[in-house]
Length: 148
Image 1: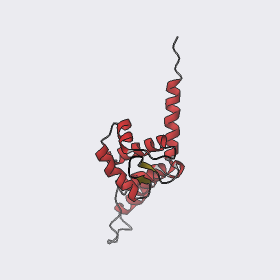
Image 2: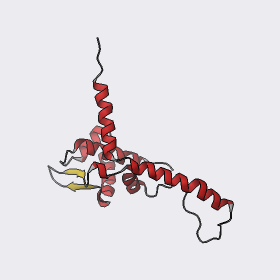
Image 3: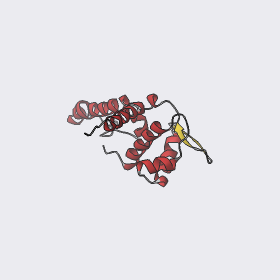
Image 4: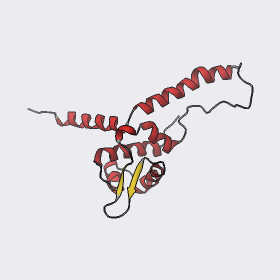
């Protein structure tokens, strides 16, 4: 499985939105500038996120985007599934064939299925709030450097 630029940039933008919104709407150009991303590309990404119900938007001079739910209720898995689709390493077995007693079935059950479950478990266990907390902790630690 490879996460495309759409997934990587979308996740960055969602974390940026969670950091800077404070309940207000954030203009997409602000996110694009802070993250050094193309505003046009982010428009496409946010259209998908809005359609999926992860963000809300308001048009106009005071408009922009905000999270549709609390950052603690939106997981990395939620964001990546919207932007990437299925996150499986290997797609499902050919169900039209009788393969229950084959090596292919054994590998599918013992390797691919467990790998897919592990990926989902990790991505669904990390929320945007977790990433915001980690970001703030990282930046606070960087700010506490003293020089003599």
